[in-house]
Length: 146
Ligand code: DQA
Image (cartoon, rainbow, N blue to C red):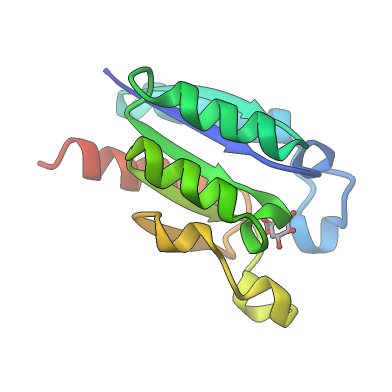
């Protein structure tokens, strides 16, 4: 069974109470539970990790080499700033999908740039928590084409 790590970055631990008008009322624990369940349904083994620290996220990406078959990353604000995270993803060469709850292209200009987008298979944004499910489906199709 293919293994997928869902990595969430800074401030996403506050989902549910953080600007619910932008990010929704669903907590990260609810999203992670639903992703594990969806993974089981479609035949992916899902592991979830959240960190507010760039270095911890980079270590998790490095550790994914040889232990995970795909990555789903919502890097929060590091999306827009972190060349180091982009380099980590390209260094491990694991198929990666970038997710954002909000439509970053419809928001402030500083959110329009994503360094991760340069190294991701694709980006899913604007669909709230459903975006993680869409990313799991997309990874499944990529890893196990029918
Ligand atoms: C976010 C969008 C980012 O711009 C923001 O900094 C976040 C959350 C999203 O999921 O919509 O922390 O990644």
